[in-house]
Length: 197
Image (cartoon, rainbow, N blue to C red; front, side, top):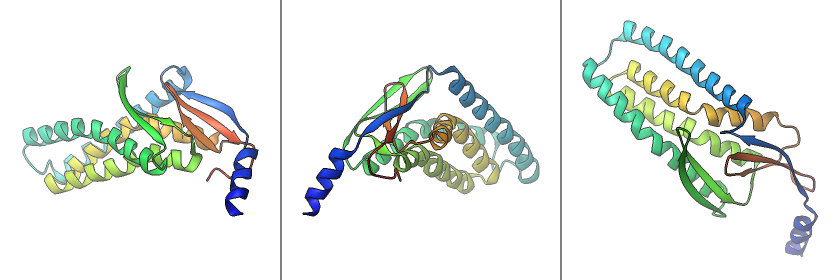
C-alpha cells in the first residue's frame, strides 16, 4: 500500500524550469564570478602579507613556493573528483559523471536525474570545504600559518564559480531541484509535493 501511494505522488509531481545559470555564457554571472574571485585574492593577499610578517615563511622561500605551486596544481583535479564523489553519493548513483575543460576551467558534469536544491548545494560546496580544509592541514604541517592561508585563499578564489552558483540557487524563488547541464545548471520548481530540502 505504501509503495502504491509513493507511485501516485511521483505521478502527480510536475517539474518546471524557473531559471538557467550559464556559467560560461551568462555575462553578468561571469562578471560576478570574476569579481568574487578577485575579491578573495585581494583579501587573501593582504592576509598573506600579515602572516609572513608576523610568523615568517616557516621554511626557505624557494621550498615554500615549490610546495605552494605543487599543492595548488594538485588541488585542481582533486577539486573535480570531490564534486564527482558528491554527485555520486548524493545522486544515489543515478548520475553519469563526465569531466571536461573549457574556457580555462576544469569541470565535472553529472548527467541524470536532478538533485534537490539542498543536495546540489552540498555538491557545489563539497570541494570548498573538503579540499580547502585538506590544503590548510598540509600548509600547517609543512610550513605553518602563512602557507596554510595561501593555499586556502588560492583554492577558494578558484571556487568562486561554485560559490556564485550557490548564491544564485539560494536566491531563486521556488527552486526545489537543480539539474546539471552542458553550460551550467537548470533550476527547477517542483509544483507537486516535496519541499526541495
